[in-house]
Length: 207
Length: 227
Image (cartoon, rainbow over all chains, first blue to last red; front, side):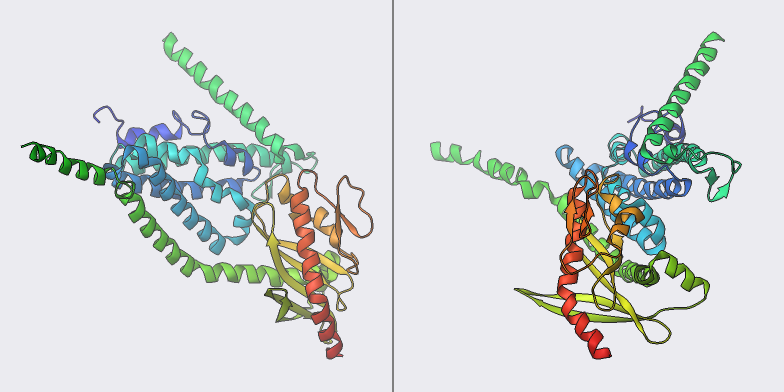
């Protein structure tokens, strides 16, 4: 256990060095599906944060009782419970948003980021590290989703949060808010992140 | 001597068997299931009424559009007018079961009946589809449909919510049941299927047909009785 990262390291790693979307390429279903608007992307990230935090803390608390061959069942059970709570909560308090996100909120159950964090971190480390890990990873997820959503919403509709940012002469690139736009934006941003980290590694090696 | 020696390994075997019993091994799963299940029941009991209220509000908001069409509803909203909506409940006897329909009766300010909005639903491709169906006072034409809830395949089946697709139902005659046609060649009594989502298209059309068939009698009777 001594070589496990500390809580602070877990937190930092989740945001950029081990960003769930750009580095681990996990959770692509919501990444591609709900990033046509910034509002939807943020709601989605908030739901994921709630589920991931609760699931990580819960699994961490019962980690000593887990049996190796039954652990996945327990992970799924825990995640499904919190996802259902999040889904009902959204339907009760932000009804319009929950209609926009539609099936993608229940689909958090099969979001591999969460089961990955339960397996990698929460089932091995204490509550503090697991909680910090959950927050770090979900901030990383939020960052990735928002960056894609900002590009798509601005280029696709010329607006962000219903405020016009591009001049009215901008011919809205409708393709950006349609599914292909998600692949284009995600691919380009992923390339950008890789290019940037390769370059900063080179400069660090040169010194 | 021999029987006693044989007896000794027996008791650990029994213990081992108990330890390896599937149910005993899964004790944590079972306890968590009970615990999570009851907490979800609690959440549903607290939030359920609120969600129902949201749905009801959405239904009431959509009624002008379903009866008068989008332009008519906008005109009404601009003139500050409101429809007089009365919720009613109809029980229809069907072979083997009884179907209960929530129907909203829409009257204008002179108490003239403008139409009915029926809340209905049925099995779609993925999950239940909940619909609002608007019909004229004599149940002769459909004045519009609106999808309240669906979990159809994103990108294919969920196109049933688009204005373009559901707009096809507007003005359809209810004399015969509506059919579903592939390839965009729908006639007057047909609905064009969504490419790649024939089942979703057919489900919605069937839900509409069933509701019209069930309610044509009771609603016409009520409309005539009202005169």
